Image 1 (cartoon, one colour):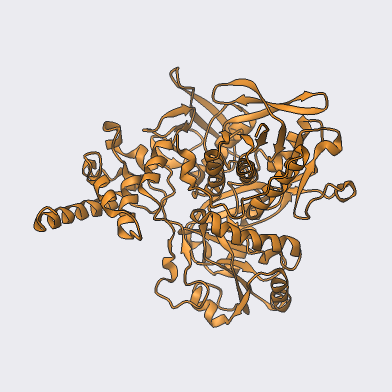
Image 2 (spheres, one colour):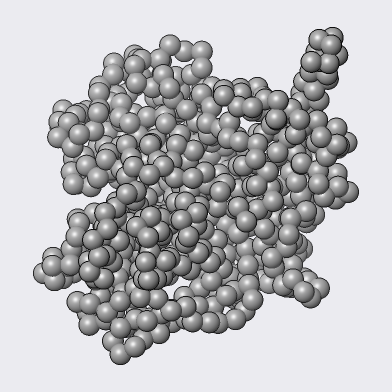
Length: 239
Length: 387
């Protein structure tokens, strides 16, 4: 069984973090979350990290792996060589709580502010007649609120007040299917100087997203929507 | 309410217990050594049970499942996919269970109905076309992290304190009564004592370890299972094999992915569970029987976790057994006051487990406060993150 080297960012707020190397034996079929959990279980009980579902549904285990945003639970060890250390650091652009742990509250508060579109008709059978009972079949929205896109976004580094890709994608999703939502409020949020116009189209969010959301395209659609709304107001006499 | 209850564990049981306690007016502190749902609850198969899986073998638990399933639909819609489930017969042996299965579901109050194979295949076009029969039930899918967060968010709103990354390391006694918990704040690296009137052990497969710190025995047998997440969703409903529950007989879809499960073996240490390679192969083979080509979407993740199964030893004889499907132990019977354990059960029945243990807490304190969790909608899981 191969021995993997993990270089983990360690420390607590108040003093500078350091990188520490651990060695852990696991089969190549295992995942990075297994390696980190095994280090915690067998070597260092003080290690702080977030995790829950281990199948990319909860969004808790986001980190930076060799500089790229990843969910540890779907990052297979076989991607790496046992000869070179795998560097694991916490996500950027969130308050750091220690080791690999960050506080995702700011993002969750924005998501709460935007509302919960969430739970969509299952597109698998969207074009099929359904028998009684499951016409209302639903499934979760794709966004798992993991924060990888926020960490990857270069604008987040420059503008602390930037809404960020996850929230903007959520606004776009809400506007696409507003139900009883307050679209004017959402459009105003997106039209804010720290909203959709701040995006540089670096596309890092879409590259980092582990869950098919494609925030960059959503922000593009949102901008077009904002322009259409502006024209509409202009033609309509500034109503 | 002068009484303070400390709950150990922020999985589904601890979270639901904290909510029930807060709703009944208790002062509540939850201590959890890691993130919310970082143990058994998080690494769940995510099946909102209709009870169909247990209808033939364990009707009492099946009845609990369907009752709780309908309650959860009312109180936590944000954390559920409502996509139903299909029990399919793949061969003659499966088919021989059909009438018994339908009768058992009816007996348990589970709205099951057989649908023609042709219709089943129209609904689930990727299903093995050779299926012999299909029965539709109100299974669903939940999001385990959000499930726990929704209970905790509501508990916090009602005054509870939730301390994550805070590990219970010892009990504080006054005589033979538990008077508090010594905890280690893992972020600060400091220990302190939290005083309480009652401590509820909701540590799942770790409940035995927690109980041992108080010098009492809880017969929890950590029993692991492997699950495989695949990167494509081929089925809209939960697909179950129409037979007695066994290995690799269920595929639970979630978003654009799905989870194949599961297996079952006893483990000593639930902290880290190595994954047996043969279990992975078995699960993949079985999934292919349901839906040929299933694993072409690629494996996304493989994970294992321990269920908290309760051993039968001496339980009924002591009269401590409150249910066949989960157990509440009042450790006064072991000579330790102020300490109860709630364990066993399933995530679908977490609310019922909480009701049971909080009833016991109330009885111990001589209080008569009715449970209100059945009809109280939970806050959004996102409210957990409010300041």
